Picture 1: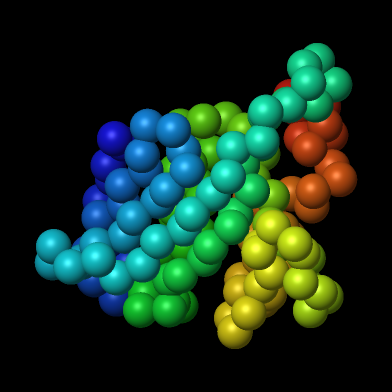
Picture 2 (picture 1 turned 120 degrees about the vertical axis):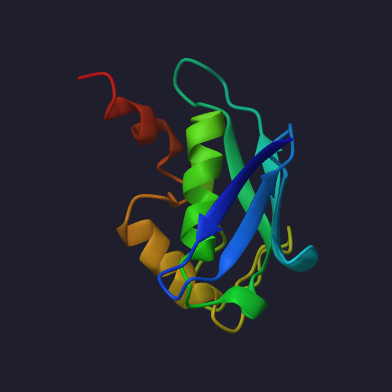
Length: 132
């Protein structure tokens, strides 16, 4: 288990725990669970396609707008050094259940613009940036 403390600009302190497999990120505040991100590991076919983690459940509504979700994804990438993908932002409902609802589409769009989340078809290009 990898654990980090995160202090928001407003001074709120959250504890972020990433399990050893990278498939669950739990967020607590004052020992109470206030959110989580569930991910599914997809094994790649190296050297062309790396392993990646696909967000299957995004439940951070109790801590939204404080940067906690961003820090969760940053921490996951620091630990596992693998691409993170998410469902489409177009309102479709993939069979794997990874569709985005409520604030999810906006959050994922922002994380994609910051490079923390890849689209599912560009996993291979994730590592190309580091080969230069």
